[in-house]
Image (cartoon, rainbow, N blue to C red; front, side, top):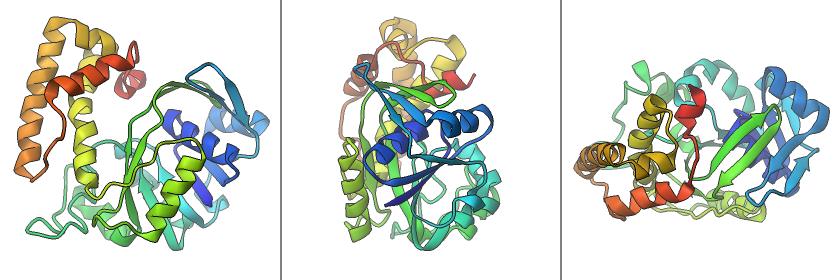
Length: 280
């Protein structure tokens, strides 16, 4: 398959490098020193076990127009960056191109292809004025949930901290040919890529932890392990998660694990800085 990864940071680099090493045609949309490093020596991946692999066949381009239409576009930037990329994003689209949103959190398309009383509802908090909803056809969207922890330790170098699972799902819950092909491509690259018939519940499962652990980590400079082992921050996270679960349940979402199981999962990641802490 032909993949474009928009956002060659920790997660984008991890995805792009492994897909390229598996033989797929991959172009990373990158900037500045990251762009220079990838063009000079490929993209280096430091695996969880310490092995180093270099994806030398991967392309790096600063402009999406130079990459051309793709089979799948993996969107791995921060949610607030999508609007500024929109004018250029369509250069990557052909008639059948999938847009796979690898951005944890409630996406702009959350109520698209859902059915029921909430169908088509706009989310101004993440898509002011419905700009993304109007510009990107709902049929292009494939949902993705990012579970791994990784860090961009130098330009063109990603270290995998933990995990290799990316859950995928069609917004309407179908098991389409395209999502099966996408899942197979991910698995051939060494990822776990289960296809969910309820991608929104998967989104909430990851968001459930992120909306508590991430801001706490950014404010305290603490790792996941430290947050979970320090009673005051653990209690604060639990209170935030209790409130979030009530919101999810009001939308018909049922989170399949307990609060304590979710906190234990975060603690097991270890001394990892959340993505929000890495940003600050």
